[in-house]
Image 1 (cartoon, rainbow, N blue to C red):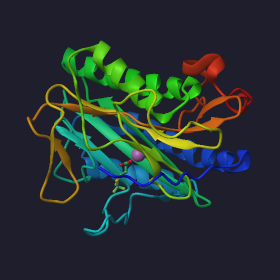
Image 2 (cartoon, helix red, strand yellow; image 1 turned 60 degrees about the vertical axis):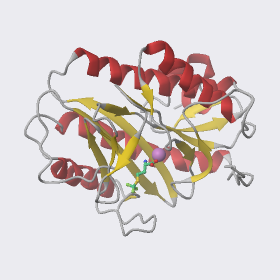
Image 3 (cartoon, protein in one colour; image 1 turned 135 degrees about the vertical axis):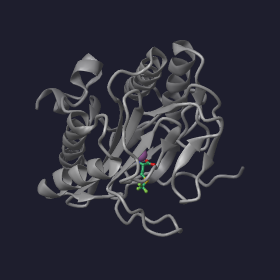
Length: 278
Ligand code: MF3
Ligand code: CO
């Protein structure tokens, strides 16, 4: 396919600090989701809690009303359960049960700047293979984030994610969806595949802000879209996980804008001094 050159929005350190404010709102919602999600709780209830946390922080839920051409997205979060991969709409009828694997995706805007991150949560006791799936997805995300600190090109991030998943076990890496640039819009260039080669793609440069978001399954990488026009499910019904952080490439390292600690614990010396100085 012939693709135009990506148009990347490079951020100043001051703009990255603004994105950090939005990122911390997203992190706060994740914490509220971890505390609230459990057997008997509907995903609509989680949506109400998330919207309250976002708005009480003076932020706006970026997903609500988001329109890719088929009508506005109705929720403030995406709540994808088990075989749902991403973009599942919160519902009163979707009541969580012990053993479910839930991925919650959250977006917030503060002062025009976006944060976007997803977390996979175990509902009660889950099967060991679901814990392994969640951990493999988280490990792949961190491998991608770590690569962002050292790689020369975007493909280095994609390759690190793919490599991490392959070494974790027999998982499908979802095709057709991936990470993205982020800034004054939720979705910006470049698109970030969760597989690829290190030499490919645009050069990584300070000022880039990227959403890194592996999606993996216990089975096939193929997906299907439900009639609601949003929900993406695995084609074979296998369980999926989705984990995401928004990161910024700073002059001296990576700042994980949607992690409460800025990524310092995971990244060590590869974390930006701005993250360590907080
Ligand atoms: N975080 C999601 C992504 O990067 C966006 C959610 S889609 C929406 O694809 F419609 F809910 F906004
Ligand atoms: Co995203």
